[in-house]
Length: 180
Image (cartoon, rainbow, N blue to C red; front, side):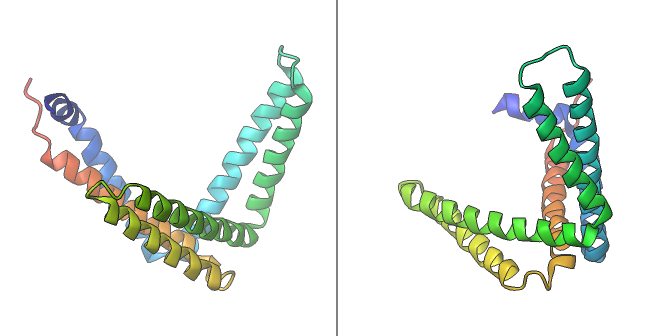
């Protein structure tokens, strides 16, 4: 326990900075979820494109020969996905929203099944509740897809960012300032 407290004290500044930054990003995402959904899609597209180009360069000019064909194919898929997300951001937002719905539905099922396997643990009910909420959210997103695709990813990211930022900020505020 003391090691964890010492670690939190050493990371106090990082917690505070990360928490404030996360809160600001979350507030922006919630205030402008449509814009933020497109920004996230474009960022993901850029990352796919850059990593795909780096991978194709490595596959074509790297010294290692094994799996060159598969590495090239993987790189081309990343480049194509990145290009599609960059040049067709609205379709990209719709695709990401569908993926989020499926992830929530699957996570809900897994959490519910796991909660029943952990009934001996007093906190099993929280896992069950988490699974039920994930199922409901996944069903709501899927049921309104693609109508709500433009804003749901930005809103969900914003909410998660607010919770994450709050947790980091509280960790930073609760850590004692490290004595020199």
